[in-house]
Image (cartoon, rainbow, N blue to C red; front, side):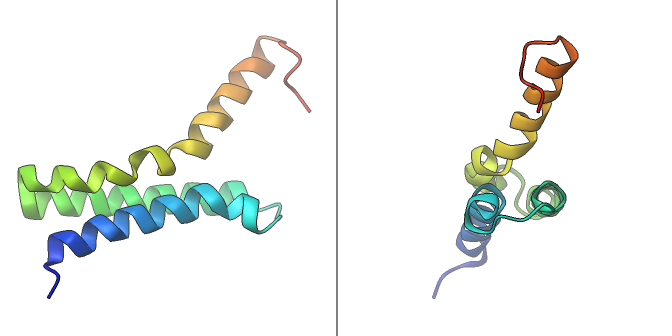
Length: 89
């Protein structure tokens, strides 16, 4: 039987992949809101994992690159628009 920590690592990857790939799978206008809400739920799970497992909870960071894909892209686009680098729609 899989222990709880392994399940939480798979939860991290699952939330991360859904947050990253959702806009590509479903062309919806609300993808920013959905992706950011999944990012916030991942952060809540991260804090809960660190509280429960301490150093072993670092395995939960496996989903971090996927979770931060859209928020990082949106910040970079905002900065490019602010500095007038022809990145604005």
